[in-house]
Length: 493
Image (cartoon, rainbow, N blue to C red; front, side, top):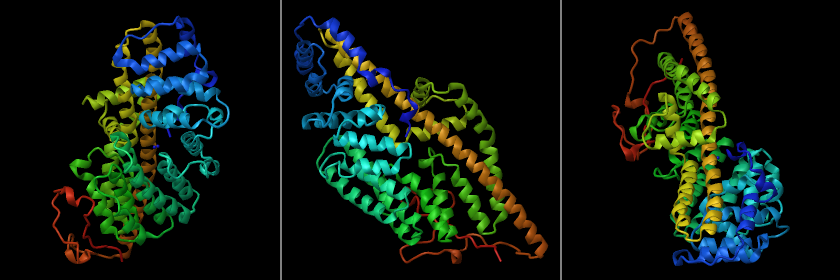
């Protein structure tokens, strides 16, 4: 639920009130009836607007009627306008409306509102959005204060608030409270999943549950409880959206346990065809580092050389690409869209980065919400009252353009993040290359000869009674992904 929204310039009309809505409404208040029975509730919303003469206090009624016709994105401008002028605690019915809209359109539509507006209400879902916004700018203690006691245990946003709470405790180094929050998050999320049948909501909750499950393991890793972390990582099912990214974390955990063969086994899983969309340059860094710890210097050097050959030229091209398009969010949205349709985005590396983003859970959530909004277009087009259709079309377009830019900003931020990871990985590879040269030099001076290496011998394999030895020849079995372990002998003295 990953930090890109603050890049977007907030439209001034949301800070001062929606000028677009008001201007059009003042020209439209002539008292038109509604003729299309398939949009009866939208017609009632229009009638409320006409009778209220643009008074914002009636906007919750407008939103309520629009939601009956599932016009979620069309309702956003009215809800934002109401939040921007309302003082004090929101009525319970408005809190419910906010939750229903946010569930469908996502929190990012409301994260772009100024903090001053978000602070005006004590609505639980808005408190959560405010805390997320504070978290993303590094105000962790403030975010915890915002969450503390403001969200009831049975509120639909509580599972996500607990995940955020656990994450903050982890960052602050409070492992005990982090694990308690994550465990509470898991149970609360499971309970909430039993209370809904909405497909998008279930997916969001499943991802939240899985991130909290991983949060327990991550917290144990941070506290150097590596044996506990190894077991906790196993609690995450392999069919989870989150699972591909935690293989790398499991590999590091094994590295700190000095189980280098298992580290390499975890990393080799990323070569499976089913995971070819994953981009994480640090995988190669850890692989080279592990070979170096086993004193397999030629293997380490090969990993380093292959890394430079694969990424050095293309990474420069991606940097120039990002400089060229700057904050053109529309372009980055269209780039992702064309890649979804199978078109090439340019260099092989750029395509890989886009493919990784397309599989990201947060990106999928943004796209799903956008598609919900696009489905409203035909509904609004079917409104027979021309003035009413024009007003609702304007509001819907405003919300969809913001959603498009949110998607573009997410893609752009991910690309910058990947480039940053590459830069750090190049630094790591340079260190490893120099270290390997130094250690090989020491070996020559020591006059040690290791002779022929015995590679892949079962006697070097650490396993328990439930694990079996299988000679790996490049095949990948879906039910064994992540369970591989190398059987290399260390050549260190």
